[in-house]
Length: 93
Image: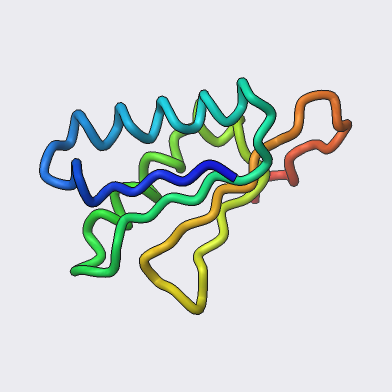
């Protein structure tokens, strides 16, 4: 599992997107199945930004589901698609 802590870059929108992109693509490249993103608790604005990023069409192709940790609202788990696993994304709707 790869972990991305967004606390160090939370003030810079470009750095946030770059960190998210790099981490997800690295996870896919190395065959990781889960990426843990830590936006922190705070006001929830960074969490919303992360979820909006993950909602982009070209990014949604990389994962099967996003899980908001119920025990820790400052953590988001992204379950990635395994290449060659034959597991398709569930239909949108």
